[in-house]
Amino acid sequence: MAFDKDKAAIGVTLFGPMGVALGETTIRNPCKETDTSYTTHTVRENANFELNNRVYSKDFIIQSGILKKYMGNSEVLQIPDGVIQIDDLAFDSCESVKIITLPSSVNSIGAYAFSDCINLSDISLNYGLTTIEQGAFLGCANLKKVVIPDSVSSVGKAAFSGCTSLSAVHLSNSMFRLSHTTFYECESLKNIIIPYGIRHICEAAFGGCHCLETISFPSSLSTIDKAAFIECISLRNIEMPPNIKKIEDMTFAGCDLISAIVARDCVISEKAFWGCQRLTIYRRDTL
Image (cartoon, rainbow, N blue to C red; front, side, top):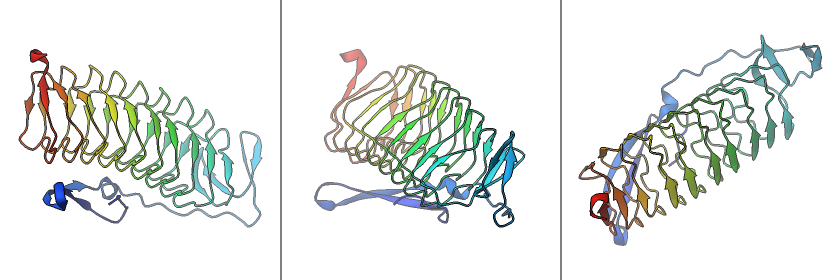
């Protein structure tokens, strides 16, 4: 059910007891919303290049500080110092790489830059990085831990979608929004702390995180979009912050183990907890 770059949307069917289908919904595929085409740049056989008075091999294609493409097959990589941007699709589907370290000079990771690097297990993101574009690590199925430095203010749609081994995430304190499908189908993620400053959790941001058990919401949070936690089947007790005035349809649909939801004075849409057979809702005013 994971997104790929060729599908416009996916359908999600929810099942109740005894395998009875309860209904279905559709989640847009952000991978189809941006043109990520690029021109392939070539270098001479056995050619080297110089950057900041250092000579690097032909494995990297770099133009004006932008790493356009990686052409090698190393398992462990140190991105050259002086690179300021990792371009769209620069490492797309590079199956050899396992460990990558970024220099302090990098400020932007482009769309799908590391998508489908299926053996990438460790990425060291530098302080000074400000932007991670959509789909940057989409489908990195072996990535286990991500620390997003506090210099990062923007993480794009589906940036870590389909990282099925991702079990630990530390979010930047400078972010104000979690984008559409950011961590969709990160099936190994068990706990998440949303830092203060986050105001908006977008559609399906944590959808399909089947092992997610606990989530801590900040008091700054005011909006949670539909399907944000759809099919988080291990999710249990949740305390909603006071600024949440409405829980949208399908927000927690299919979260079968939710037995206690502590909510302030907010409107709960009819299908907000669709298919949650054990649901109990406690209003804070009654506790």
